Image (cartoon, rainbow, N blue to C red; front, side, top):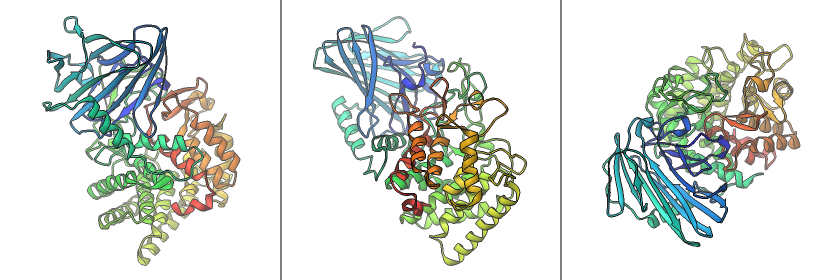
Length: 581
């Protein structure tokens, strides 16, 4: 229906249970129903069928903005003869079985004439709309297992088995509402557009708490809102709303991120705690706690939002986003990532310092410690999900996690966990200290890795430890370019030729610079990386510095989390926030 757009022009509508990507032509290019990891009903983003577009009839240029502290987006077009806006949102809070997409066409200046096209294609485009009928001005249909109801559309036509098409005219100063309901269950009574908007506006107004001091308060609040929009009623926060968007063209690096990565959930919880703790912190603690209590030492890196196993990776018979294939599921479902357990302890330690742990959570703490005790000497896949090795970052993160819960533990546990942390750091130092004095990736991999900055940031070792200082200097000189930071050197190619800059690493660098007392440099790293987004203020995992383009799935939750944390930490002296560790 529509050609794929560059990612910087995509906005996200989200209700916690699923998301919609809206492009600059008013097209819903991506939406999965009923849940994040379900089949897509609009899949033009990856070359599939289906879409829902509201586009001005005459020539136009596009812009848009989010209403404050919400996932309510306003597409805005300046046309040859006026200004048209489309206010749009997923009705919030979301229902586990039903998605309600509300779109309000507004004639801001002059008469608004828009073309509306609806083509629901369940299961990544496999199923056309059938049983299409209109009763009392409301359209109903089925697409595979998805029930469809569409109200507000007038003068609709359909050519054969094609999409529903309408041209809607709105007088100047007036508005016109469209309500699309999609469900895996028979639809009950509908709700008026006015009531849906009122409920959505009110709920969003209660979702973002007071944010503490920040060097970028507007972006911090927006980051919080994005994280809330990605978080299900189960407490699980998906890593991204999309799948298969390539990190590097034609290199097989396109993944399905519509699942909950434990590490990312912990990053988000830490960020919320630093910027102003609220229910998102409790959600993170609860979800991670449940997974630890259920799986213990077999903790997986990622889960579905309902706590289930991520499906095996497979290919869809679709073209994919240009430069990538259409890949569903994720191969991390069979990995073990040791650093994830350490991140869980860091999350619990932070929550405990804020008195947000109960007896059940403490059982999860003990389970995490037991997991570290049994597995820290064994290889794991690490933060970058590579081949199993004795990754220094994984072990140092476990040491940081152990130190993070020492302050809220009993005297006996504190002594034992502190001794274990010391042992892990000593062993890692013996095997993973580079001849130059910095940390290296693994005993058999002498390269520097940006993730190793976290050892001091999270408290595994002191900020004035010679290895901390040497690692900071090495990352800055070997992996930093033009204000951005790369994960590690892949090969002899220049950094930008091998992969994009990792925005997570850029914000880590800002935190590390602040920790080393380089406050001005810290702000420079922060400002450079927070600008690596499009007009909707959404971040992907990687940033193509040469082309100034977003790469990978959108939006990447852990980037928003680190922006939120860094904006809070950089607003005050490092010593004032050290207790969060």
